[in-house]
Image (cartoon, rainbow, N blue to C red; front, side, top):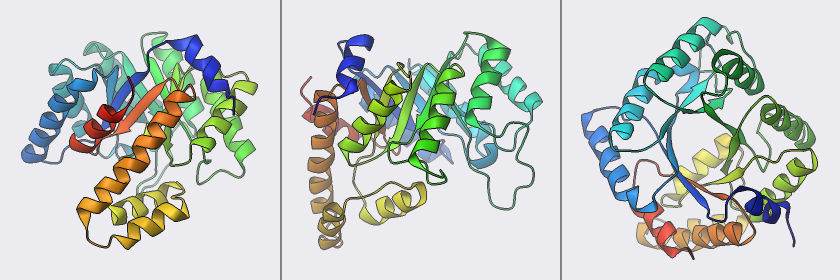
Amino acid sequence: MTTSNEAQANQYSPEPIFSLEFFPPRDDASSERMLQAATALGELSPRFVSVTFGAGGSTRAGTLAAVTSLRAQGYDAAPHLSCVGASRAELRDLLTQYRELGIRRVVALRGDMPSGMGPMGDLRYASELVSFIRAETGDWFHIEVAAYPESHPQARSPDDDLKHFVEKMQAGANSAITQYFFNADAYFDFADRALARGVTQPIVPGIMPITNYSQLARFSDMCGTEIPRWIRLRLASFGDDRASIRAFGHDVVAGLCQTLLDGGAPGLHFYTMNQAESTLGLWRSLEH
């Protein structure tokens, strides 16, 4: 089918934008592994890399340390920034710190409340965080936000979810990265509906390599991503055969990536899980 993404590709760039996501390492050994993965993934020439932010800001120091390490490798590194549990003063201090370090890109999220945490913070929604960043820093930051092609798990309806997404884009976001998914039609439908509501900024699909079925199932149940039944059944049938899971997963996700790019998606954002092999394999399989 013809999608709005074909028009988007022409509006943005003839070349797809590739980007990567890492999470903050917990110790020196895992930090070294992240940096080794980042070095190997330089083959993709990613436009930027992002680093996640734990629930309620629980990995704030680790996020900044990872961003600093990745910037030292020459990457444009973007910290995730969550407003849940944070005051305006705390957010202002963090933005000031990022500016002083020369960081020019952030991923603005509402974020998740960690178990047992008290107040929500001064800002309740990601759209409010985007507005706050713009009011405090003008155009200093390129602001990425999240999108949910299959709807946010807490959304009352797909239309309500789209409404909140449009509000984030209208508040001043430059582009969006989606939650991962395995159904290309979900992405194209979401992009079409967003364009109909006036969103012309890039909406980049988030891509999750399939390497571990039990881990993928757990993540997907938490974030509301649908694993199509035929994929679940095939993955389950491999049992503990990790090589078969990886081979099948590569074929499924590589096909998804190519379908998205052929349909006009402006790029791909890979959730690397701080590993290089699967993401490199997917990227090398694409028609560049």
